[in-house]
Figure 1 (tube, rainbow, N blue to C red):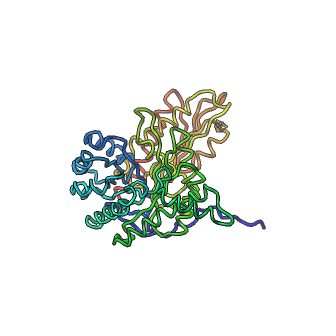
Figure 2 (figure 1 turned 60 degrees about the horizontal axis):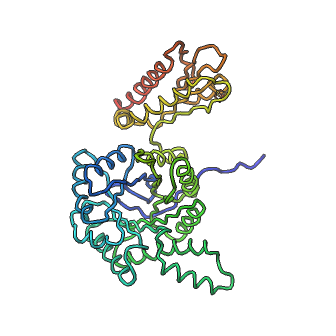
Figure 3 (figure 1 turned 30 degrees about the vertical axis):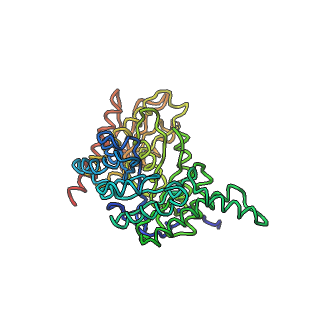
Length: 416
Ligand code: SF4
C-alpha cells in the first residue's frame, strides 16, 4: 500500500495571547484580520467613515496614523464617534519619530488607542533612540496598552545592520548580505522586545512584526522569528503593490507562513487604485484565511472558469450576482442567520461538471452550456430539487438561495 502523505497545516505555533482592546491575538485564538486607514487622521469625518467601512467589511482591528498634534487630538473624537455608531473596534496608533511626545502631550489619545505600534528603526535618532523607545513603553505600561514592535526592512536600525555586516565580514565563511539583513531584522525585533520587557512591559502586551517586501524574505524572516520567540506575531508583506500583483504576493508569502503554523494576525497591504476601495485589503485577508481553511467569514461561491462549452455570459453574471449579493448582505445575515458563513453555493456552466459540483454544494445550479437543452437543474443538499427554465433563471436561483438560507440558518437561529 502506498504511503499516505499529510497535507494539513502544521499546528499553530504556541504564542503568548495579547488582548488588543478585547480582540485576542495569539495564544491559539483564530488569526485576526486587521487593516489600516489612508485618511488624514486629523480629518475626523473621513477617518471615522473609513474605519467604519473597514470594520463593516470585517477588519477586527484598525490602525490609524498618528503623526502630529492634530491627528493625536483627533483620536479620542474618532473613538467616541465610532462608539456612537456602535463600533467598538480597537484602534491602533501608528507612531514614528515623535510617538513619545505625542503620547505624553495627548493623554486622551493614549487612552483611546487600544495598541501602540512603534518601529524600532525610527523611534528616534542616535542617543535619543533608547530613551524615546523607553518613553513609549512606559506610556504603554501606564495606560495598560499592548505594543506592536514593528520592524520594517525599509527603516531598519542602521547601527544594528552595520554592526552585523562588520561582524559577518570578519567571519571565515560570511553569510550573504541578504542573510545578514534577515538576521538584522529578526534581531531588531527580538532586542527591542527584550528591552521593552526589561522596562516592565509584560510579554502578553507585546506583538512582533518584521515586514519585508519580497515573498522569500518574508518566509525567511518569519521562520527565524518563530523559531526564536514565543511572542504573538503580526504577518504582512509590506509594499505588496497594486492589484493582482499585491494580492498574489501577499497570498503566496502569508499562505506559506500560515501553513507552517506561524502568524496570529494578518494585514494585506494593498496599494489601492486612485480613489479605490480600501476595504479590498480586508476582503483579500478574509479570503486568504478562508480558502486555507483557517476561518470562515462568508459563504463560498464555487464557479467553474467557463470554456468553449459556454459561449454566453449567463453563468458568469449569475456567479457574480450571487457573490455580490452575499457580500452586501453579510453584515445583516451574520446577525440574522448564525452559521451562514459555512454555506457553499455552486454556479456551474454546463452539464460536464455542473451536476457533480452542484451536488457537493449546499445549493448549486448547473446552467445549460452551448447546444444543451435550455434547462438548469438545481441541487439542494446533494439532491436534484427542481429544474429552472425561461428568461428569469438568474433571479429564480437567487430567490432559491435566499429561501435556503432562511430555512436552514433562520430556523437554527430561532431554535437557539
Ligand atoms: S463545467 Fe462545463 S462550462 Fe464549466 S469549465 Fe467545465 S466543461 Fe466548461
